[in-house]
Image (cartoon, rainbow, N blue to C red):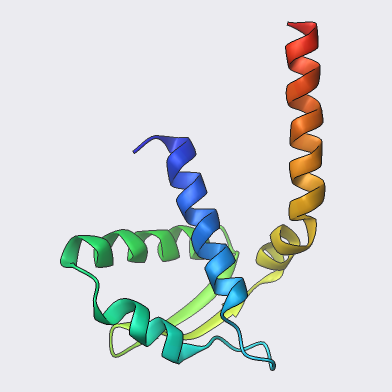
Length: 103
């Protein structure tokens, strides 16, 4: 898996984390329980490694119970990604256009 694909998978998981939060900000542990129930061994290992990468990047804090994320909190860097995603995407496009026209 290329680095770009890995980043996309990590950000897709972060988006899933953002979307599956309860009104009080806590994670929807039932969602994660169901999500992990039917994973193959390989899929389980892959998603756990993505959780680990997000934790190491200080985007989330996660505690596991019964083999699924039970306590999952979006940290400041995770919120920053969420809040700045549109601005980041717009800036990235501008830079890409600039590189294309200057190239």
